[in-house]
Length: 240
Image (cartoon, rainbow, N blue to C red; front, side, top):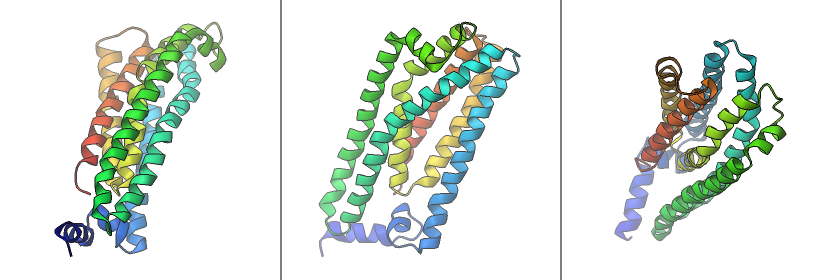
């Protein structure tokens, strides 16, 4: 048995590692390990949206609150861009992790797949965001904003479009890290993002008074997503 093969088998048999949960753990323990953090992350995601709506709603301006609602479908499209690369790349990474138990050379391809998926999501997000900024006013009309909500919606959507590469990369990294069994690390990254969002909402909206309230809220959200992206990226390079 080669030393590389022995290393792969040793890593797989180490109880409690992410690789062990994917390859050798009892199915119930694996489901708990993967599903509980994912469910917690979804709850945190709901709280994440309520935080933004709460800060804007406290200003008692229906046009500002409507801007968040009009921007929601666009956020879904951005998540779809990240999902194209993240879900596809994550599925291939999972297959390579399994193949590496018998062919250690396959493990070297995981970095190439992850790199392609990550930068592919960044590039696709940049193209989408650039086109959206060029067509900002028609896009806001398509989203359904009326004359009263157009200024606030335009400000909110413009910042979102500027950060599309970060958003797409964050969603892509979430899938890639989870594909390696590191669901707990993804949960930690999303919780950190939500906490950062609260801090930046207070800083940008209540302290610094940057621009329109919805723009300040979106800057806070995007800055917190950037912190989550960094956290997920660091988790992906950690223990597997």
